Length: 117
Image (cartoon, rainbow, N blue to C red; front, side, top):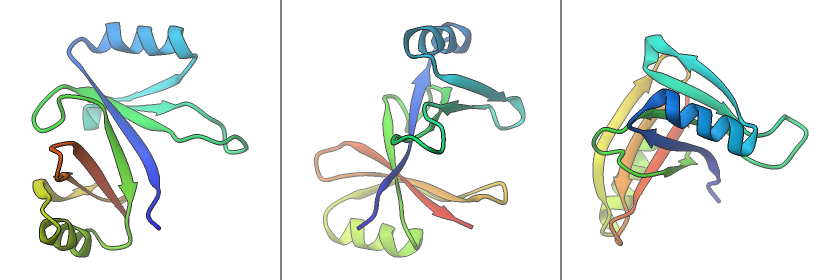
């Protein structure tokens, strides 16, 4: 069973969005300008929950996205297409950490995929 391992929240105004989530929920935010990304920590290693990220709103990420950890992105992309889903953005390296991809499910929802390196 593949698990939800990450989430992403797009923004139009990064400072405004970060202030909102920091103050509304107490999230810790760590900006990574070299990747144009902000890491979001919502939980420590001893608590249940997932962490995520924030990024500038841009296609295909225009609304919040859940990301599911998979063993093999290429295999998952093929299975998703066979089941009627559509690839929005194929396999992309993320530094040396792993690979990401984005798909639309059969209902049009955008879902992220993550494979550890």
